[in-house]
Image (tube, rainbow, N blue to C red; front, side, top):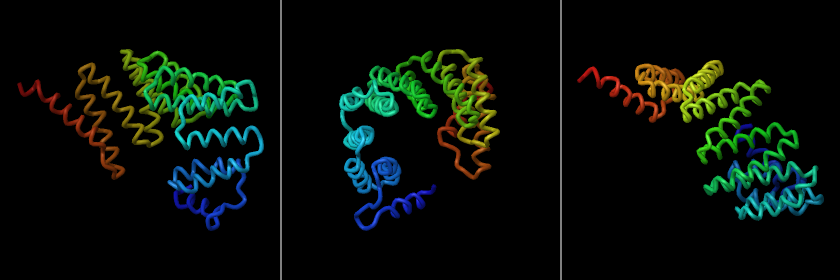
Length: 274
């Protein structure tokens, strides 16, 4: 759905200043769309409707959660909201969502240990629910947190689980991203053969998908490994190929990419000029 279509859809639901025929469930589902489109006033209207029309424990809980997010409440408020529902199987998706969001808040505040603890709790509820999409988000969050904690083995474990899920689903785009992530993590811990193998997998998938961003990420990592082994010409070839890919799509190559090629060119010419 384009931005114009999304705006038109939201406008259809609004007559003057009153929104007609919207219940709690629909209001809560429309709020993320309204936020993405920058419709702040509409977000407030939808949130008011969600709270006013809420009848069940689930609807009240989800509406309260949305209100807390709107006010950027303290993480303790989120935990207090979720804890009473931990033993309620019908509310396990809600608990997982609240804890996941709490982990994101901790992460944004650089509270990495707290972020890891609560994100792990969220993941356990995702696993309990058998929620593949939520599980994927949870694994990605934990992988990111482990990187911030300099826990490469933990990050590698979560990245590997993401890859396994992507392979099982046959999702090539997610496989490409997961292989790249694994490659960069392996390079960080000095496992260069494993890193090169993973990044090459990512590069090959990106080529098949004709994904220039994926090619850049994989090539950048492969160039890192080439540089570590003082294979500067190979690194230049990898990065120059990326520039050509951008040019073939009439897109400007990132400045960081051009700057790195320039630096490699100077480095590669150094010994011969001495």
